[in-house]
Length: 313
Image 1 (cartoon, one colour):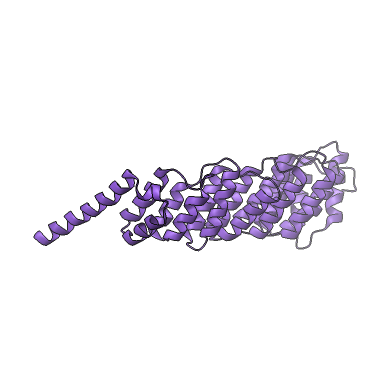
Image 2: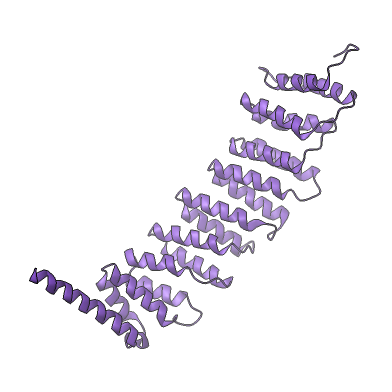
């Protein structure tokens, strides 16, 4: 490289790839090759970075990525959004937490424009690695720097879904509560439903599910009635049914149709005593409602007929 016959552009890239897979990374030699590459009139590209990062990854040296990228930037390379996102994803998915933080810190000091796409890739990588502490920390930092309304909904949905798939609905609930109540975020309706369903499936987070329903109401979403009906058909008590009925409506109690669905769920599941307990706690206009009486009568008469057929047989 000190002679008159300098390495060609492909040879320089080949040398860079060989240097990064060496037993010890010689950054001085790496920079010298970059100088020759640039002096020959060449311009570093995303493709060059991708091939070098691929070599780094092949020998488990992704932690050296920040140093490699800095050296290339010193020699005129400007990474695209796509390349930055790939690096963020590989660092977070590969468990390189400190390096990922350093990468994002450097990015925030050198970029004037939004780096939302890089945040997305970073958080996706953490979610794939099931590193929810770092995923949630990164999301908070993104909201702080990018703003609460800057494309947060898809990522919040991803975080909640990952929490729930890893059987951590309570952690998801705490995170959503923080984002809604403290940061003013508005999750998707589907995100709330995923969270509600998982909280109720665990059978010990009824109060938290009611709180989620309150958040939904405050953002003009309809309550996730289906998840609650399923819960009451299997587990929910009469006392919980009353709490749910009072919480789901801006009025003291919801429409009669809601009561009918709850009674029907109890009766279809064979939970007659719970249905009767719930009925006894309902307001008088529900107890005397014709459709409610018909529902209980039809179930009772159907059960009597079934017993009669059994005796006859």
